[in-house]
Amino acid sequence: QARKWLKTKEKVSYTHHKNLIRFMGAAIDAWGVKSVKSIGYSQVEDLILNLKLSDKTKAEYVSCYRQFFKWVQKREGIPAPELPEVEFTLGWRTIIDIATQQAILAEIKRIVTNPRLYIGIKWLTVYIAIRPNEMRSLKEKQINVNGMFVLPPTSTKEKKPKIIPMLQEDIDLYESLPRGLPDLYFFRRANGNQIG
Image 1 (spheres, rainbow, N blue to C red):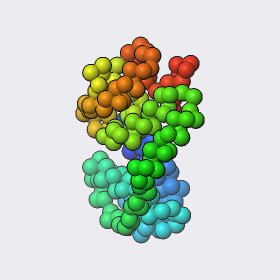
Image 2 (cartoon, one colour; image 1 turned 90 degrees about the horizontal axis):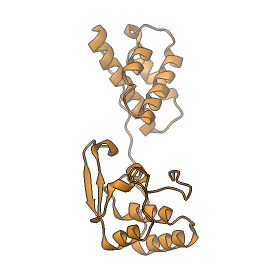
Image 3 (cartoon, rainbow, N blue to C red; image 1 turned 135 degrees about the vertical axis):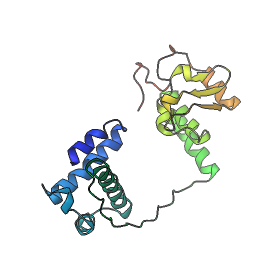
């Protein structure tokens, strides 16, 4: 059943699918060829307790198993077992002050040979509505000559378009660089390959 369920999840993102394979692989290793009917709370709890991982990661395993058992219940009519809860507290990100951030940006600008690398890092500090992977995947045509980032639904995690106005200093930075063909990645090496 685990392999059939993983087949139904092939359309999720590559990283998420890879994680599901890892989570289900641990279950297959722990439970072998047991019938789904014979797997319950204690088997899942034993598996989770034996993982040498953070509580957050353990909670991700349990979440995966919860989805799996719900799928089995819909597909086969086998009641989903109650599963253990794993409590965790997310850590806080370290936040630096503006002066330190500006000093770091100045040093990056000084040492990088490709100005697009500096611009990408600078823009990530300013345009927090754009995720790092969305920024990395920006194409020339997605930076509007009127000073807007225009990300189509296919480029965003939310699958909704994002239109984000740029500051004048960033428009000037953008216009100081040579333009490429519309479908070229904006963040690219001098030889044309994408940075990242």
